[in-house]
Image (cartoon, rainbow, N blue to C red; front, side, top):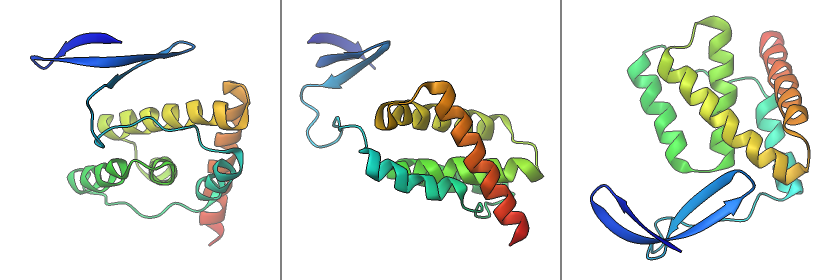
Length: 145
């Protein structure tokens, strides 16, 4: 446990270290934030269908797109993370991503790949290659459909 001062407020935190990752979880966080177990292998494999499916259209207006993607991100599920990755990747085939979109895509990919390594017990490089192949399958399926 460690006491930290964040945004001018002092609070007690659990310090959780996993390899090179450190998490600070508020001791008195109520139900607002919580730790969860990694996604099971079986459940994680179901997410791969989202990644290999054709992307859904997202708004070409950057403000609307940011709002759409922010709403999905707030859902906090791996399904929403996968749909963000799929749809931004699909969008990037047609238009260059702006800085906000590119940063969101990288952040969500990193989050997913970190979970992928743990859930499927594979090296990061293997997970990255598989992700790229699944997204390419989705691009091809979208072009054919």
